[in-house]
Length: 296
Image (tube, rainbow, N blue to C red; front, side, top):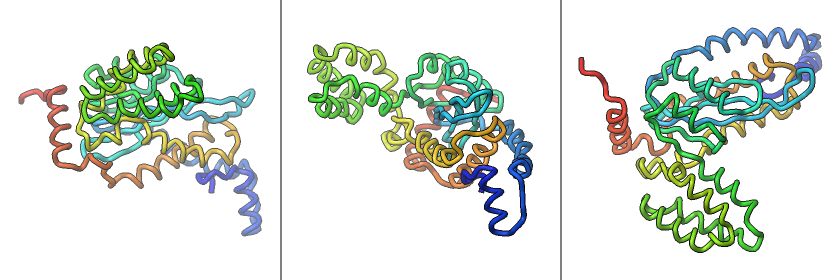
């Protein structure tokens, strides 16, 4: 009940109405607190050495401290060599920042994640540098959806549909060269009306089009951060009924229980595209090229 989003008072009332047994909210909190030891073990568990993809995204929740304020939960998700997706860790507290992500990435590295091909995330200032500090041999893919969303409000109403459709020609092109050609066309068409927006796309084009270096079969999994955003949506749905969480422990309990459930569901599922023989071979070649193994 607690994991599903019921607060301690709601759980206490429900138990009393169903069974006649009275449990105070404090007692319910103490019962659910038994999971805190499991959280520590889970957060420190060793991780696989190689991940084809690491997704990073933050989710804001309301925490009651001296006042009620929004604080970020940093989430890291990965797709391993076998194509299995899992939440690697979550970290609660403060406002999202590149320094916060730097600590997250250091933790992942210390727990074993030392060889990564691709990092997928939005364009938070400084996150690129933080990621590359830890994984200098990895590529960066900025989320296309975030970029389009950021551009959309700056386009006049009468142009919105045309501009968005034209931008689609860039990331739906058949290959990287065609994508660059499509951008040139978009820029020549809209550059005078929206110079700042076109310049912003141009400056970020190398990381927006990184996915073209990878097999087309996994494009849908890597050209946006949709995978981790869908996960965050589920977490938000579970946390929303609680309005605001009483403290850090309360937040960690709910999030941890949800993480366990998520990882159990996806433990044996292969992410679409990653099970294709040619894709596995190509990714293995990329790993061996970037992270050559020492000859024994």
